[in-house]
Length: 330
Image 1 (tube, helix red, strand yellow):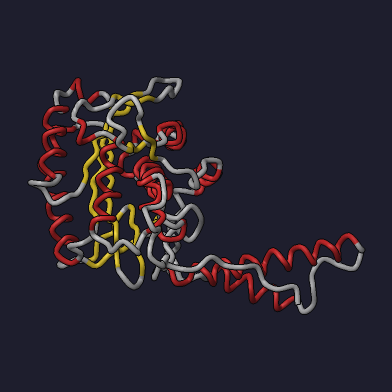
Image 2 (cartoon, rainbow, N blue to C red; image 1 turned 60 degrees about the vertical axis):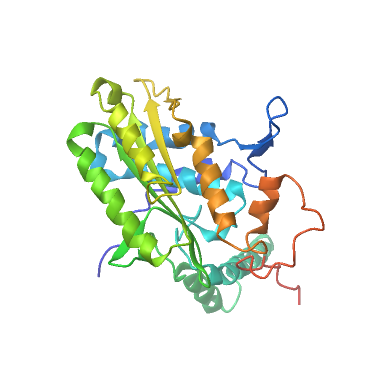
């Protein structure tokens, strides 16, 4: 039997849990034209990238640990944008990918496990034992919770082949709403530029042909040695060409990270506005709202507007899965 993949995101869960997703990332700049602007959480990106970099994974490109940390941050930003927690993959808990229709069942199983733990604590305090009877019931619930029909990867069927997509927002009725690829590279930029371009184009055609209404993004993280290798202008040009109106992606982002031996990590903001963090999430979220009816993704729209529209939104018909209420006492 094949062994399950190690969970590369488990070291990041406690960090992500400390950062709120309930507040809107949008703000109005009163000193400018009053337009709503997106403010990405750069501090969170810094903190979660420091984890794999400190462990030496930036020098082991094939490990994919830095890319996984980047995935976790992009997914977090989409939740800040207003997507439901359970609709964005990778999730902030295991399993990292779980079809949305199972979210309510998963939440109820968690409620049952918490109730069992509370009652068992009462028994232990009273000196009557550790487990409720019959013990088999607890084991059955725990096994059901552990064997949720999820996985570690979001494998999406394209036109030509199944593609493992790094960050996904999907609903079982609509299919994917967001498909984002993330790439990291910290050396030999010029040697691999053609391969990267071919990969991006092939991936985009494969997915775009099957999901023409999905918002598609491409994120590329490099280190500041990209300037020493005289590759920055080529990479920037590649990322600009990959995005609309001429390319297949709705948004592309080029992140240039710099860090020293003490892991003081920071960003060199790209002078091309289209490739910066705020523009990327603005374009992705706007593409989703453009490609779906107004009664879908209402929380995205509410945060984008900063207020309820005149007359309010129509009654929602989706909101993927309803929130789960606690079980009754009897």
